[in-house]
Length: 320
Image 1 (cartoon, rainbow, N blue to C red):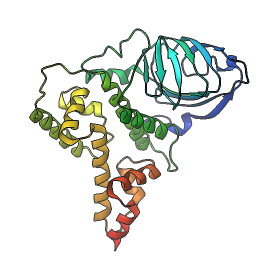
Image 2: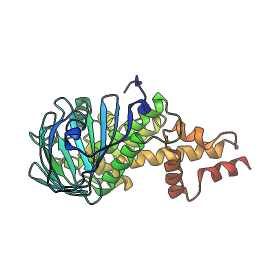
Image 3: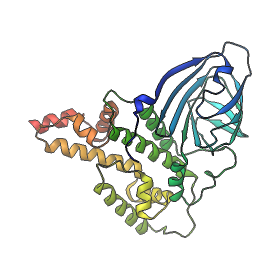
Image 4: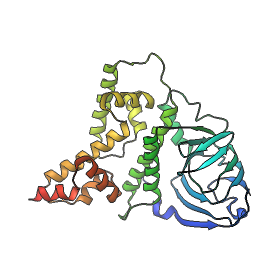
C-alpha cells in the first residue's frame, strides 16, 4: 500500500446518536437500507464511523429490536463482526457474537436484530478480497451471492476486534503515513486470518510434518528480512507460493502459533533486542514505533505478557 493522501484522524467522526429510523436510513457507509422498529419504546442508536483510503468502518449499537432490509454498498465488500450478546437473523443465517458475516458488493441484507445489539462493519475496496483470494484455495465465501456467515477461530476473531479498535481509535501518539500503514496492515492480516478459516486444503498437499516445518522456516526467514516493514500475511503467502490456510497449518504444527502472531512476537523480540543493546541511549517509544507498535499502552501489555517485565525496565537495565 502506498502512502495515504489523508489521515486516519481526518477520517474519524465522533459517535452520532439517532432517535429516528429515518435518520439512520443512509447513515451506514455505502448502504441503502430501510429500518423498521419492532418494539415500542424510545429508540437509541449510536454510530461511530471512520473512513480512510477506501476503507469505511461503522461501529453501532441499538437498544430495540429492528427489522432491516435493503442493499449494501454496490461497489465494495462488507464484513461484519458482532458485539458480546448480539443476536440476529440475517439472510436466513442465525448470528451471534461468535460469527462473521460476509457480504459481496451490492448484496441484499434482510433480517432483524435483537435489543442491546452491537456490530462493527468493515466496507473496503475489492483489492483486499483479490489479495485474499490469491492465497486461498476455495473462494466460495468471497463469491457468495448473498450474505454468508461462519464461526472463525475465537482467538482470530479477538485479534480482528483489536485491530479494528486500534485503527478507529488511534492511540495518544501522533500518526504519520507509516504508522497508518502499519495499522491498515495489521487489520488486513487479522481479517485474512479469520477468512482463512473458510478455506479447506486439498487432501494430498504436503501434509507431512517435514513439509510444514520447511514452509514455516522459509516464511520465518522472509519475516526476519522484512521485520521493519508493514508486511502482510497475504504478501507472505504469495512469496511462499502457498495458500493462507496451508501457511496457518504449517505455523501451527511447526511453531505452535499462527503466522500473524508469530510475526508480532518477532517484532516484540526485536524491540527488546534494541532496548538491551542501546545502553540506555534510546526511548521505548522510538523503538516501539520503528517496529510498528503504534499503541503504546497495548504494546506495553503485549511486551510484559511475553517478557514478564515492562519495556521501561528493560531499557533501565541497559542503561545501568
